Length: 295
Image 1 (cartoon, rainbow, N blue to C red):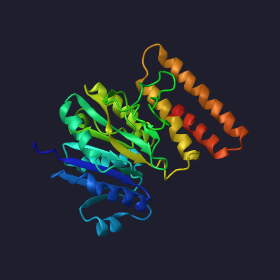
Image 2 (image 1 turned 90 degrees about the vertical axis):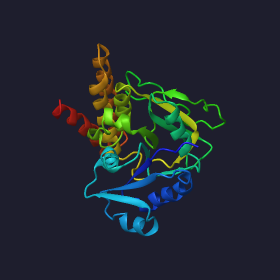
Image 3 (image 1 turned 135 degrees about the vertical axis):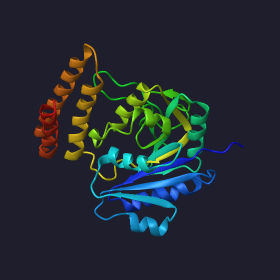
C-alpha cells in the first residue's frame, strides 16, 4: 500500500477547553492509519489558556498560543504557518469526527490533483440523523452567500453523491498545501464569518476545484461560543457579507447587489428596533459605519 501523505490537523480554541478536548478524544481513532500526522491546537487569546490541560492529557498535541483573539481566520492562519503537512485538515473545535472520516478525504485529494479543498458531510451533533452540509450552490448574486445543500434534511443517503461542489462548510475541510501556497491563507479581514467563502473563491481563482466527500462524516455542535442573536454576530455577518460583495461582485450587477444588501440591512435595523433588540440594532449600524469609513 502506498504511503499516506503527511496531514496536519488544526483546530482553534477560544475559551472552550472542554469542548476542544472532546474533539481531541474523537480524533484518536481517526489518525491510527497515518504514520505521519500532527495535531495543532491554536489557543486564540483565551482568558484561561488550554495549553496546561492539553499538554497534560494529550502530549502528542502541539499547542500554539496567541496573546490576543486573532479571529477565526487569524487563528487558523497561525496554525497553517507552523503546520508541516502536505494537507491541512481544518476542524472547528465544536466538532466530533467519525472514526474513519479522514482517510476518504485524503484519498479524494490523491485521486483528484485538480482539487484544492475537500469538504466532509456535516451532520448536527445534537440531532445526528440531520444534515447541516452536503455540498453547496454557487454564491447567490444578490445575497452573496451559497446555499448549503441538505441543510435541515434527515440523512437518508439522498445527498451521498461524491463530486465537485462550489463551497465548503468552515467546520470541516481538507485543503492542499499547494492551494494555500498559490491562493494565500484565509483572509483575516473578515475576523469571523464569510472568510471561508472568500477563501474558496480565491482557491478556485488559483486554478483548483472544490470536492464533496459524503463518505467522510463530521458532527457539528454549532456556535458554542456565541449566542445566535448576539450583537457581535450581527455585526460581523452584516459587515462581511457587504465586504464580500465589494470584493467579488463585478460587472453591472455589482451596484444592484450592494443596493440590495444595504436595503436588507436597514430593514434589519428597523426590525431590531421594533423588537427592542437594541444591541443587535447597534451591531447592524456599526457594520454600515465600517463601510462608510473604509471605502
